[in-house]
View 1: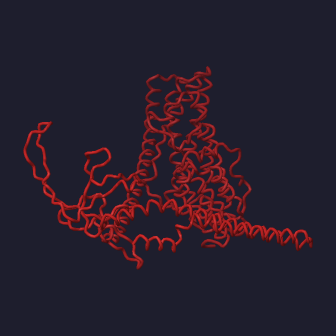
View 2: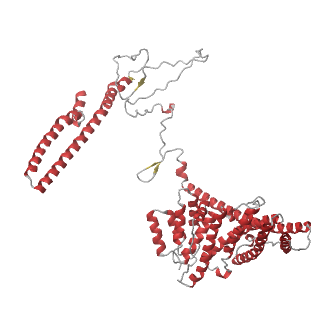
View 3: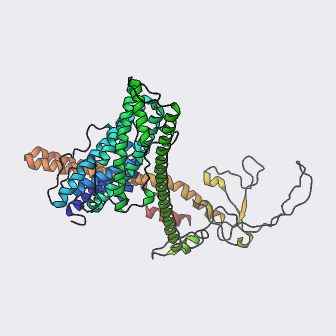
Amino acid sequence: MSGQSITDRITAAQHSVTGSAVSKTVCKATTHEIMGPKKKHLDYLIQCTNEMNVNIPHLADTFFERTTNGSWVVVFKALIATHHLMVYGNERFIQYLASRNTLFNLSNFLDKSGLQGYDMSTFIRRYSRYLNDKAVSYRQVAFDFTKVKRGADGVMRTMNTEKLLKTIPIIQNQMDTLLDFNVNANELTNGVVNAAFMLLFKDAIRLFAAYNEGIINLLEKYFDMKKIQCKEGLDIYKKFLTRMTRISEFLKVAEQVGIDKGDIPDLSQAPSSLLEALEQHLASLEGKKVKDSTAASRASTLSNAVSSLANTGISFTKVDEREKQVALEEEQARLKALKEQRLKEMAKKGPSSSATTAASPVLTTGGGICTTPAIDLFSTPSSTNSSSRMPNDLLDLQPAFQTSMHPIATVPGANTWGGFTQSPAPQPQTSAGLNVDFDSVFGNKSSSANNLDAGGGILKPTVTSQNQSLPISKQQAGILVSDDLDSSLANLVGSMYCIVLYCIVLYCIVLYCISLSLKNIFFLLVLRGSVCIYTVVVLGFKMFGLGCLCEDQSPVWNKKLELKKV
C-alpha cells in the first residue's frame, strides 16, 4: 500500500469544502502512506497550537477520530502526530489531554488486513498506553518531566523530601510504559514505526535525566530521613538500578538502528557499596545489628555515588545541548534559504522596482507598465517652467491663470524687528490683467466696481491670463453654483415619478387578476375607474410637477439659454 488512497483524498476534499484547515491538515498528516507524518504538516499543527483562535479540543478530537480508523497506518500516524504536539507544541495541548478522563482506548486494537498489521498492532497498543500515562503524569504533577529545568537548581534537585517521594514513582511508571514498547532493531522495518521510535528515544533521554536528578536528591537526603521515608527511598533506589539496566538496552537498540553515538548518553552506574550502605542505615533505624561503619566511610561512599550519577546527568545535558544546536542550525539554514529566495525574487523585479522611486508606474491596457513621471502637486514651480500653464481649480471655479515670476529687490532698512525690509519691484500692468472676483463664487458679490472690498482698503489679487476674460469666468462660476441644487432636485423628481408609475401598474395588474379570478363586474368597474383616475394624476404630475422642476434642466432649455446669453 503506497501513496494516498482515494479515501484520504475524499476526506481532505470534504474538509476543504467545510473550510476546516486544521482538520484537513490532520487528515493529510495521517494518510495511508507507509511513512511518518510529513514535517510541513507537523509544523503547521504546531503553529496551530500556538494560535489563540484555534480550538484545541477540536484539534485533539480530530486525532481521536482518526484513531478509530481500521488501518494500522492511520492509527499509528495519528498517535505519532499527537506525541509530536505533546512534545513540541504549545503546553495548552497537553493540558487539555491531561484534563480528559479518557484518551486513546486502543488496548484491543488489531488490524487483520495483513501480517504487517498484526505486528504493528502490538506496537500501537503499547504506544497508546505510553501516551495515556504521559498525560496522566502531567495531570498529577502539573508539569512535563521531559521539559523541566535540570541542573543544581533544577526542579528535581530542589524538591523537598515528601514531594520527592511522591514524584519519583510517577516518573518510574512513565519510564516503565516507555520501555514496554520493547522494539528490536530488526522490527524497525518501516517509516511509521521508525518515527515513533525516534520520539520515544528522545523522551527516554529527557525522562531518565529527570529521573537521575531525582535519585541524586534522594541520596543526598537519605541519611537524614525517618525510618518510613528511608524504607521508601531504598525501594525507589533498587527500582532505579533495574530501570538503568533496561534503559541501557534501549539505547543499544538505538545505536543499532543508526543513531549517532554522540547523541547517545553514557550511563555511569553507582558503586555497589552504596546499596550496602543504604541497607545498613535502614537496618540500624529498625534496631537490627549491623556492621559498624563510620560516618566518614558513608560520606565517601555517598559522594562517589553522587558524582557518578552527576556524570550521567552531564552526559544527558550534552545530548540536549547538541540537539538544540542542531535545531538552531536547521532554523538558520531555513532562514538563509528564505532570504536567498527573497533576493532572487527582488532581482527578477529589479528594473521595475528601481523605477518606482523616480516614476509612478501605471498599468496600461496592454499589460505593460507606464513609467511616466508623476506630477507633484505640492512642489513649487521652478523658474524654468514659469511659462507652463498652471492646472485649473479642482471645481473649475476659476479660469486657468499663469503666475508671473518677478525678482524681488531687497532694500536694506531698519524695520520694526531690527531686520531688513523688502520692497517688491513694481509689476507692469498689461491690458490683459484679470481681476478674479471671489464674491461671485460665494454668492456675495459687491456692487463696487473697483478693487476695494466692502471692508475697504484691501487690494484683491490680480493675475494675468492669456486665453480667458472676465465675463466668461463669471458665467462659468454662476452656472456651476446654481446647477448643483437644480440637478439634484430633477433627479429626485424623476425617481419619484418612476416609483409612482410602477405602483400604478402593479395596482392595475392586481385588480385585473382579482376580477378574473372572482368574475365580478364590480372589480372591473373599479379597475376602469382607477385606471382613468391614476392616468389623470400621472399626466398632471408629469405636466405640472415634473415640468416646473425640471424645465431648466432639459437639454433644449439649456440650449435656448445659451443662445439668449450669446
